[in-house]
Length: 307
Image (cartoon, rainbow, N blue to C red):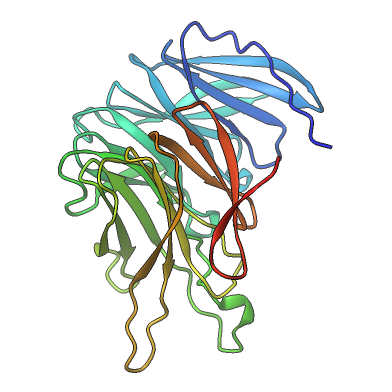
């Protein structure tokens, strides 16, 4: 039996995001009140631990890094900045990095840490139409940022990393393939775009532009695949539609690319999509303040999961 617990966040304005850490023991929230809050979660009880202040505008998203890097939390804001917070001692947080004011010239709408196998990398999507990748170098202790070439000209709404383990690695008898460095972005140009970092050069390039939505794409999420032979992306649109994009494996004489399937037309704008840990269930939140769960059936059709 599922149990839902609500509690008062203490934010003074609208809450835009809430994210549990890797262990599900801490919850970070952010708000238009310019703050980030951290809570401890034990069962159905929660305790307020910290208020993180440093942004000068509404804070849109928060994102926990993998615990192998310590207790690190990133936040992004309307103030054009990303702040990386570190818990230096028990419940004592400090800013360890702030993106330079010249990196982005408009609101930063979405952030995502890369899979831990790739190192400490943070992608940020901005209304200035660009996406930045900031990487921490353990040898020098510095953070270095690069920009993806191009991106979405009107504005970028969301960014999501692909799993680092290549699709099909779990069931392949071939020698282990190197980790994959890919991500997907969504934008106000009604498209999603796939990007890959070339292993040989370390340079990012666009792989695919996928049209399909008739209005802004509000969110995009790359599904975990656990090494299984498929790669799936979910996209959510202002047009009310949610699509699942499945990558076709290019074979001799065959064509690769991505196949689009409609999950559901919600008839109202869809704000966020999020995958379960195994990538088998998709959660969707829409403008009617409804959260629904969806699962692909054996015939390839998507059906709602009761909850």
